[in-house]
Structures are given as structure tokens and as C-alpha cells.
Amino acid sequence: MSIHKLLNTTEHRPWPVPEENWRYYQEWNRSVFLHWKVEMSDLQQFVPEGFEIDLFEGKPWVSLVAFTMEKIRPKYLPSFSPISNFDEINIRTYIKSKNKTGVYFLSIEGGTNWSCKIARAMSELPYRFSKMHRTQNKFVSFNSEFNDEFEIEFKTGKHIAEKTSLDKWLTERYALFQDSEKTKNEFDIHHLKWPIQEMKLKNIRVKYPRFDKLINNTPNKVQYSEGVKVIAWGKRKTPQGAS
Image (tube, rainbow, N blue to C red; front, side, top):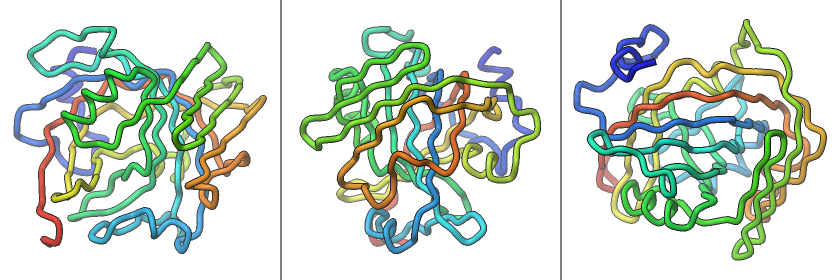
């Protein structure tokens, strides 16, 4: 699908795409979703003031998404595969801000050191490098600094034609909110609806000591997707403490 057609396919969105020029193109491919229903008291310490935790049927959720980032590039430049293509793991929760629902990252890891440095400098997102390796049905990551370990072996199943309301709530998010030292940042994104497949876990090890009350080896829900093409806009900054 061309970028023009992607930008003009918007009937699924909860709000219009921004009028400003987009800044980045990227693809989030071969994506593994692990989701946990968590307790508000365990999650609140990780979400800064000014962001309201979003709830599904009265409960917050935290997700680990492991995927391969590909073809990331600024609008007027080509992608450069040694930097543009890398494996990524993010741990996220779901929040609301200024009448938009989006995601907030508790952690972001990338499998290429230079890609993490460039992404962190350009976006102020908390990217860090972890050693990663993946094959068609296996994804492994290790970070010695934080003693984080992730290993999953899985088998994909049939496509899900009729998504549940929870499926949509967990995946159809078109904004990202993050905090930096001086500002709260908002990023608009656009993609088509995630194509979701069933997934069966054959082996799983999730060890993130900082988040041991949030994520573990028994997720409440798992999903797989071949991926989406993504358009992203530049960050909008709000000074810390401003409403």
C-alpha cells in the first residue's frame, strides 16, 4: 500500500490524522503481543502524574510487544538497513491524555546499539540496547545492566476475523505519550488496523525484576501479527506541570 493510500484510509481512527506534515515512516513486523491484567496499585508508581491510566472493564493492563522494526526513515530520506532495521521489545501500559487514548512505555529495548542511540536522541523515548536474537518462531533477549531476560517460542494460528472489544482496546492505539526531564511529549501515529492471528506459547521466560509485579510467565492474553506500516508525526511538547 502506498503512503498516500495509507494516509487516506482513516475510517477506523477515533480522531483525524494531524494536519501537519508527517515526519517518519516505519514498519512494525512479525509482532508478538503478551498482555497482563494488573493491579492499579502496582502500576501507578511507573506512570507519571498528568497521565491518566486507561482501564478496560475497570482494570489496567500492561503489555510486552516483541517485534522487528524495519525501514524506519525520515520523510525525505531513504531507509538505511544497518540503522533502520532492528529487533525491539517494548513494555507498555495504556493511558488517556487530553481526550486521546494511547500508550506509555515503561521500557524500550532495541537489538542494535547505534539504532537505540539515534532513536533516543531523536525522539527522547527511553531506548536502551539489549542483546537480541530471533528466528521465525523464537525471540530471545538479554540485558545485563538490568538483569532482564526474555525468551519465547511460539506457534502462530489462524487469523482472527472478528476481534473482541479487548482485542481492539489493546491494539488500536494512535498516540504515544512519554515524559522527559522537562516536558511531557505526545506523538501521533497512523496505521491500518492490526491484522491479528492466534498464537500458542510453546515456551516462555519473562524476567524483568523492576516489573515483577506486572509481568510474568503467564500472560492473560497473547496475540501475533504480521505487522503494520506506520506513519509518525513529530512530538508535541508540554512543559512539566502544565495542564
